[in-house]
Image: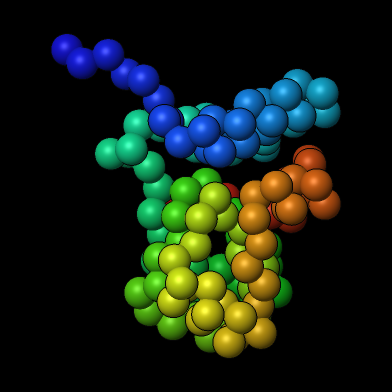
Length: 121
């Protein structure tokens, strides 16, 4: 068996630690869940296409993807999408649909309890 090491990216490690610390301070299960999903091994990390976000999200909703947002598909409604990382085409398509692409840190700074935020995996 190979020993599980978790993320090796130092920026992702620091983000996970910051989210966990904030989850204990605010007693937020939302933040704990986000940090657990980000802490998965690389083969199990979450990648979500824009077509899936468009299919399941409602107009004006805030979505968080604890992983990468990929650019396959189109986004036909204005949404606020937060993620660890965006591909170039994904970010362009989100902004083209009059939505916002923000980082996880920005969303947590604005809304640490995660009220009215949908986690998309």
